Amino acid sequence: MDLQSAWSVAAKDFKIFRKKINVIRASIAFPLIFAVLFPTILNYSIHKETSAVAVTVAPTLMDSFSIWFLFVAATIPTAIASYSLVGEKLQKSLEPLLATPMTDGDILLGKSISGLLIPVASIYIGSAIFMALMDHFTQGVLGYLYYPNWHIGIILLVVPLASLMSVEVNIIISARMTDARSAQQLGTLLALPFVGLFLASELKIYPFTNTNLLILAGVLALIDLAFFFVSKATFQREEILTRWK
Amino acid sequence: MRTTIDLENLTKTFGDFTAVDSVSLHVDEGEVFGFLGPNGAGKTTTVRMLACLISKTSGRATVGGYEVGNNSDQPKIRGMIGFLPENVGLYEELSAYDNLDFYGRYYKLTLQKRREQIEYFLKMLGLWDKRDDAAGTFSKGMKQKLALARALIHDPKVLFLDEPTANLDPEASKTVRDFILELKKEKRTIFLNTHLLDEAERICDRVAILKTKLIATGSPRDLRHSLSTRRVRVQLELVDDAIVEAVKTLGYQIEEKDSDSLVVVVGNPEKENPDLLKEIQAAGGRVQFVTEVGSSLEDVYLKLVKESE
Figure (cartoon, rainbow over the protein chains, first blue to last red):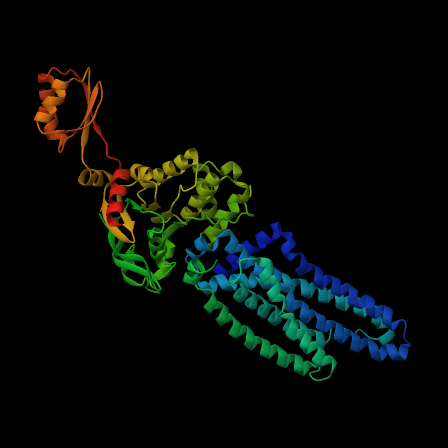
């Protein structure tokens, strides 16, 4: 695989996204909404409690809220990734692209980068705002700055892995779809396993401790690798030109 | 002359369906080669195989000396060819300039080279003033020209053009045809898929007629002459029975007759016309001029395609 070629594909997608702002709107909006909404809720909640309760509740709430960035990571790349491939399919722009010396791997890597970069960047920006606001609201109660800490550090490590999985699943789904919206809807189902994990965490079946998050990161890395090969197998020139409808 | 494209029994099947059946032909360097055939004849499939977009089922093909189907040769073939698909597939949201710029990047051209090439082709095709407009706002003809520029951005030696003037209005078709003729002057090898026989006749050095199998190959002129009857129109002051009788007596068949002209079937006009005219004049005919009634490539094409059914 050639990174320069892959980056050219991604750069082209970024330029198109700039013209089609509705495609990336959700990717930018959700992390920013959560970044402001959760600290506001927390601020409201802890000021209703006594300071002793607030000291206990605040860290728990902050850890729970930060997990939402994982759901966002697994779902928001679907809009971009599904548009990126289905859009090429609809514009019939894949045939001339496939006639260039780029390999299937270069094109797929480019599509993965373009599907990944905006959501991950907006999640990182959102989480920075989230941490700053949380610290601002809780420093007085806790007497120290809660963020940054290892917990959110590991979550932010898992974010690109979850997003990459979402992108790869969307590439596989898009190969069978002609409509970006249908591909997107199917892709959002990917959030379900993460909702399951969240419930498991809340029920203390699989609490999101640092160790468990690192295990999750390892599992996601393996899934990403497996999905990359599956998406590569799905993305065959001959299939695309003769069977993709 | 060096052979640039060489096909030997090239075959492609999709399951039980044979799209291209044992096609053998060669295209020389600098030649414009027309690939004619009705819809579904296998033209696009052949070009896709040659552009390494789809695999061949059997047979052998080389482009620029590189083997089609050989994994290490495929990127080299893709790097040396320019490809214009039937559906131009432009990035509609991007400007004309950006469409070409990204393809320049895909072929790893330097920034300077990309700028030069884009300016050269957009100016040549009359699109320079529209360089910042989104491709989606272009007319069909402009899109086709832009897609042609895209196929040429890396200065390929070999061009595969799949129906480059299909669905264009006459003016846009002419612009594209003229541009192909300009490319011909630059000695590029051009493999042109078309079902427009007039276009093939005007542009191509040689043509092949395909209907899953190869039916005929040759220059448009040779095909016309070898596969159709040659006829001459003799324009006279007046056609009378004596003249008609004189022509028939010589053993010629009169295909059309009106008050001042005759269309006569003549096997070899260069050799036989002098005797024919002498006989007409002897019968009292006053010849004004004589012209060959051209059998068009279309006549030949229709005859061959019908025979193959």
